[in-house]
Image (cartoon, rainbow, N blue to C red; front, side, top):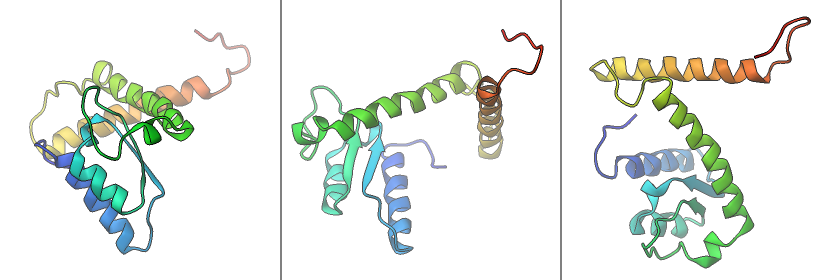
Length: 138
């Protein structure tokens, strides 16, 4: 978890990728939201040979995120999958109470997100499970 300030997510992603590279791995592609649509980050990832599936900000020109990237089938698929992931975060905010947490301190905020995430996963599992014999499903 990173502190909430400018470029925190980008720096955390670069640190994770550096650690993965140090352990002998390197991803083929990277999907991310609009917060990563930055010239420096895109340039660094392109230099490492990583295909980017970053949500583009309308009206912003970022070298490396042009029609060759955003027009591919892989990019379109990645954006559909990203939408499903973002829906989970939306549920955490609206149902799980994580939009404006009622506690202070990093440990308590982390625990709030963990508990809300567990509750969301339990709801998702319940919807996937077949109904029990004789049970009425709402």
